[in-house]
Image (cartoon, rainbow, N blue to C red):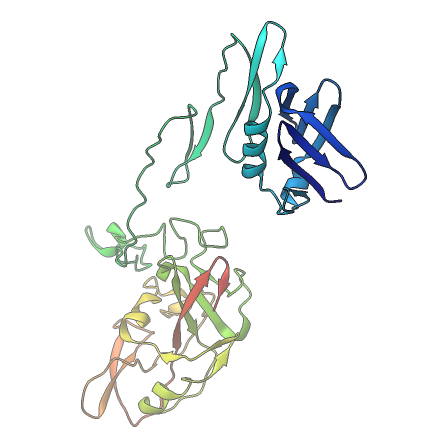
Length: 324
């Protein structure tokens, strides 16, 4: 039901469609309490207007334009008085969006409640109301990072990699911070599980806040280097289209130098015993760089015309827990 409320001379007029009420401005006050506006006058009694009715556009001015909470409150303030209480007048105290409101009697003291602030680092603290707040500046977005751990945990000499275990993350498989799925797994599927559709693996060690690197290792066919470079440029795996043969850094990134099951990629979710795989990084000539995942050297030279395996990668966009 639409209700018109407007000013006419010395009166506030309320027209609910069936009856017209006239509230003398000099004897009328309004109170806002528990999401209800009360318009009160000695002879006419009171008329109630719910905040939801204002929000829904059901309270109109003289020209039948809907009020907002702000314009309706302003109208009432300009055309009525405040609540009268024993011992003197009272005032309504409220914030700009009316989510906080209370009435203070004349002579009383109002202690405004504290507010809770969530800082840019995720911590919370309380602060007095009506006070400027300085939050911790958000750290700048960086595109740099400490190198990853290699995965080697056995030491063969003081000061070697197995002794120092230099690099970021807790270990080769465990992130120092949660991935977008709320766990510290370095490797997950596209939906955050350990079940890998189409042999697509998401490596969260490469996540920069907006993109992440995906690896596809489901193609077990050997081909010449040039063919492997273009083999999956338009292929779609697990809903992701366009894959490039991994480069030498992307190849090293997932090598686990503890040699699980005697292979650099011999761990879940890859579990690969393919020793020789082309990488896209190369130079002029007939020879190509290839992995040697059986070690001890991680790379070797192979003929570009020969046929070796490959792994393919794709940079994906991350929006919440959606990967595209």
